Image 1 (cartoon, rainbow, N blue to C red):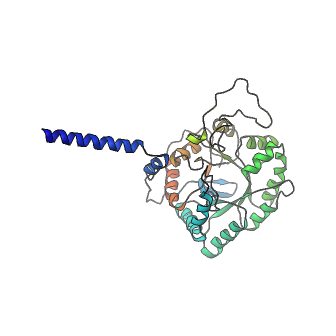
Image 2: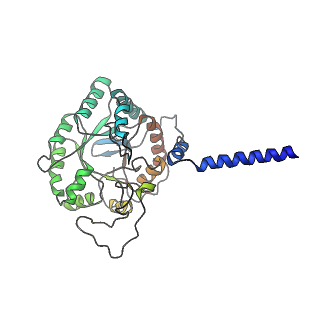
Image 3: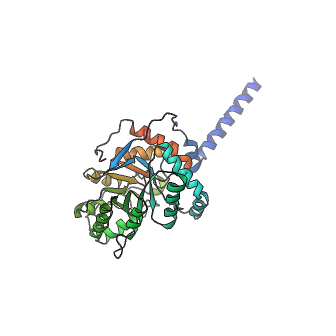
Length: 335
């Protein structure tokens, strides 16, 4: 009898200790425990694609911040240095090759000498075929030189950087982007405009600038550092600098990516242009299944996602599963 009681006490203590360990898991530890839950298919089911004009694009494709050594790392000061050490030329080529093998046919890459060297080497020496949409920056004094450099180096598409779009629209100068779009189109590439702020597509649509596509951030902001939701203010009125009511406060911890998700979803329902959503994982704070489903279900036609090589196959499988399941989607596919 005493032996049985001792055994019961032992199991109670063991279970209690296990429970305590579970409760003690950090955010990162919980994320690691949740990883690899998505089964990776061995079938050759293709990743769905859409079109922007005559360019066929996989509905999930890779962003270029990580391979260029940029990451929104919140208050971690070593991350960009770590990325630059991890993403050697060979690792970048391996990452792009994995994308192609998994069904991703497009990468968004910034305009700089490093990218030009890498993409040309990948195409002409490594034998890769991934197509390139180029992110450019413009100024009032130079609206087209980066666009022409990208097209001359094989970019199938060019778009104006989101931070640039934000600043120009906030300054009431959205119309100057029309010249950039014109030159891109006349030289045979698809032309886009990006923005973090919803004011960007709103102003571009109002001005009739006619991009071939938009890039607009979208995620649920359902993560701790996004900060709390704001209650609706019955006395709020729009201004030229802030045409929509803020959904998250200026004292949020870290949300500069998707501060007006509900209003973005409603506005984009009326937009006929293809929509590439980015920052769909809140710079790494949202699980891919949650982020992908939210973005596709709420109107995005394509997702641009920064991915390490070891994330590509799983992310493609998640996107494939989401796109082939019933989606409660109000916005028609625009591509």
